Length: 120
Image (cartoon, rainbow, N blue to C red; front, side, top):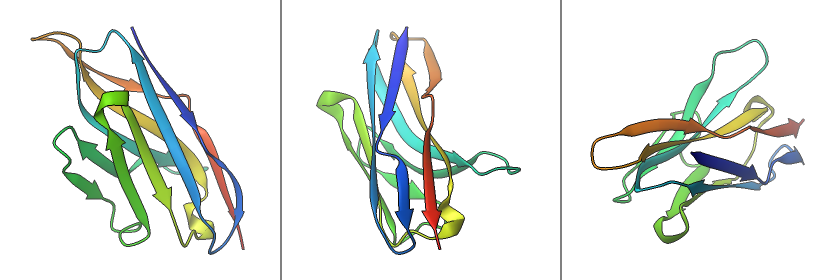
């Protein structure tokens, strides 16, 4: 079993910054991709950013230039630095990991979510 534990959410004013962390633990062979999704009230969950084990990154257009995703493969940890936050960034942020459990089996895992609230 694999667990993802997130931290770093909170309340911040527009223009402020927050840093989210997500640490994976358990029966991990390799983590191929880690990323962040978010879900605002009444909306579908959407991709924010992801990073591969090789360091390639991808961002949603709405956060490009403001958010930065990074990872520490040795610690199975991913970070999301969020700058210039806007009220529309308010959502529950979920960590996601695509984990190879062995040479042939991969599974997706989700964290419990952390609330980010940006006041205007």
